[in-house]
Length: 292
Image 1 (tube, rainbow, N blue to C red):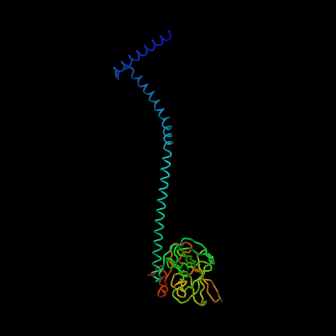
Image 2 (cartoon, rainbow, N blue to C red; image 1 turned 180 degrees about the horizontal axis):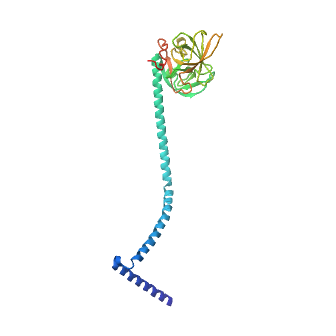
Image 3 (cartoon, helix red, strand yellow; image 1 turned 120 degrees about the vertical axis):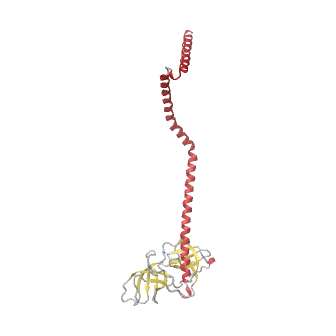
């Protein structure tokens, strides 16, 4: 009991002293003798509060990041999808622009030669019975395409149709080993036959039927044409001679030509559904560099 009374007495005394000190400090203002003590207390408790904030902020940020993670991940995924869509759209625009340019060039060549063509896209590269180097196009009998029709692009001769379905057709390329097309040398009457060779479409073999006729590197070849324009119409550029073999005593002369058409990277082509009224001869060949 005495301890309890003594404790209450001490507590009452301390409270009274604290009240007196606060009153004196308040009335004295800035001249209070307790100002240094008050500043020290403010510094001590302020430092403790700042230290607590430094410790608490990373923890709070971490907890906030955890709470916001699902939404942030969703935003990231949305942005990734949007970027992918934009890249796809840009690629499609570039592809459409490239195809439009190829189509324009192909139609220009066809118009120059007087060929009526059906435009088509190469949709697959696949072999056919008896042929290894062939492609499939997205035009068929519903578009007027038939077998044994000439196929060209904006650069030159590509091949011929060997099979036509309703909406697709198969085209054997000039580079196929079993392919053969009549060819004529620019500026003359010398004719021969162009064959595919095992050069992945990079070169074609040209056999000149007159072994005495001159043939030189840089000479240019055009299609000679077939009876009634099937399978090849005349005047389509074929390629440029790069190599000439020495064939003494043989009945033919052999050379190798680089085709104008890139037979390894075909996209837009045209099927000649009607040949020219007259042979365009060399009129469809590209202009030589430096020529006016």
